[in-house]
Image (cartoon, rainbow, N blue to C red; front, side, top):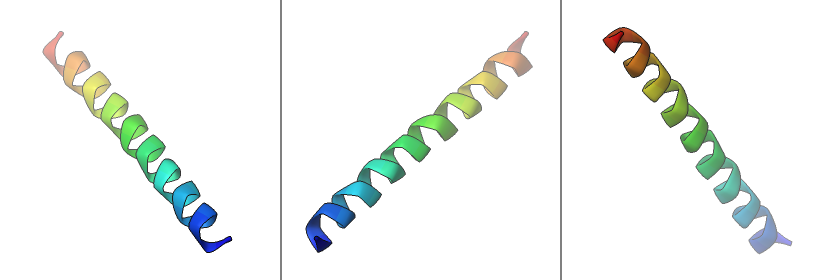
Length: 33
């Protein structure tokens, strides 16, 4: 149970990182134009 919850949090963190990276890239591209 503990292991699965730990993996879940890991995936959530990865997804959050991915989303924040997308937002940062979008801001970067918008500022370039």
